[in-house]
Length: 142
Picture 1 (spheres, helix red, strand yellow):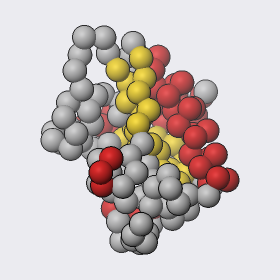
Picture 2: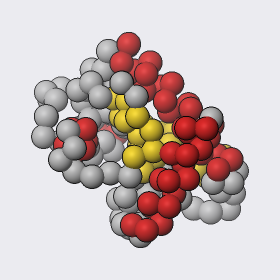
Picture 3: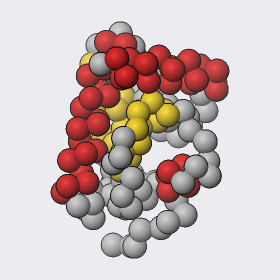
């Protein structure tokens, strides 16, 4: 397995070098909206610890990611009036991983509505800002 790259896009987001639509943060994780969402509310949850993927993250760090993922899923589903919620994680190229910093996808699902193809349509920035504001407020209250 290749070593962790400290210049991956998520590491740059963690360092504040690239902006994001943050919805949740604590000492261990950061969660933000995907700018090329597969559905409205598509959120990424990443550890602050450097981890390429599920295969090299420590158990202690992964517990924080799992807890935040569950929290966001439980809040996002009713907030976006979704019929279901999908949690996805890819490890290594053959699985479809493209950014080599562990991340969990939390994707609200709507009955009868297909997901957009991955990394194809950049969302309207105003819509993302509105979704991030609503989700962050709901997470703060919940």
